[in-house]
Length: 249
Image (cartoon, rainbow, N blue to C red):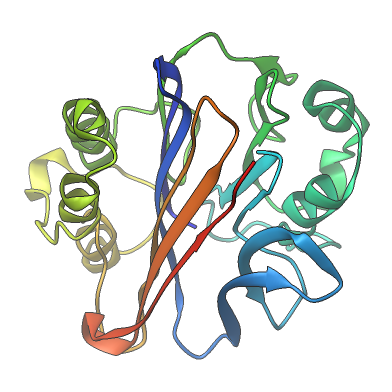
């Protein structure tokens, strides 16, 4: 997952709202949004290579999402980062207690958002101890929380403008579909070739081999109901499956 914007206790009727794009090589096997057969209370996609997930939410509003930290040349961690989200969704620990138990040395660089209904926690093995987040709008890409990368700044602004329109989803999916490339002088410098910096500067990434595999909008209403809408994509951004799962109290 390479872009996540979260509204935490900002909208009075929707205490949790998440808009996210998962970027990955198209060749990596994945399963689309669904309830998990072994844990039907969990709603999310699956990474079929390592068994984890980039984003998931439960019927009770337990939420987790992860991004990698872009740091080319670093040694690969022993465990998949997708296990961090999977294990939290299955667990009963609070977000803070779960975050405190993570051994960051086992993983490549990660950013992790954990919500347990009572709190939203951010943790990263590249950014100090975990911390509870106050109500607000937060963004993650492939650096640290709210790093001022152009696409993340734009995504947070457009997310904020879209919030009052819920449950209308259109503005959120327009945001997630933005293919605008950032001008070279405004590109971040993350150690990858400039051609990759340009490609990855878009909110919606597309190429022949790598790009946005899924756009996801998830929310929990004040009454506890959860809705997740995912649109998946193939090479060059060709749309594939669209799925919606909603719960009732």
